[in-house]
Length: 238
Image 1 (cartoon, one colour):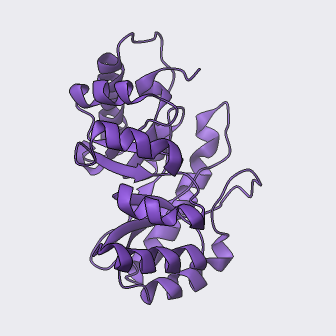
Image 2 (tube, rainbow, N blue to C red):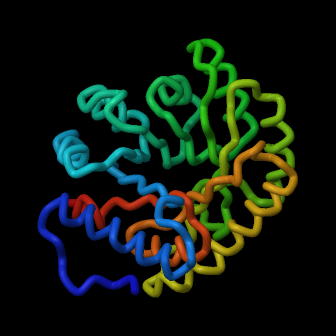
């Protein structure tokens, strides 16, 4: 079940409802709810909303743009939560991203990987956890690496001393029926499983960052370990 019969009024109620839906989807899939990290996508919402989220129990925030995120992270506190960059990262913003974020979900090129690795050295950062964004939908408006170019990026990552590859991310096309996204989530899981057998994630299983407000339950059923939920927690964006 993905539709909601009514709208919860407070952030705390919406956050609790999303947690309940995550637990239900996990149980339907014979999975432990603790396997799934909930990342609250806070892009366009003010720092006040993030502080309300912290009070409600949010531990992970996701932002799309470095410039927007920077002010909020400074205001809320760098150590107040774990910070995820989920949007496309331009190379000229990479230095600020290295300072601000704990996780980067949108690595999509060799140039960006090598730049991030060098900047980690400059900033004295010993490790930056990254996920490769895979373009499975072929939409021009969305970023990500073509799966056919993935082997070259994986080879380049082996030469990066400060980047730790922990998983894959995808953003499928939007469908009114969220079940239509299922093949994309399944494809990403199968690709993750293949890379896992090749030990590209080291001793890790490999994270799957997939699923948003309208389809995260389907993503969980297909193996998501990180879901990126914004409007279902914070309310509709203006």
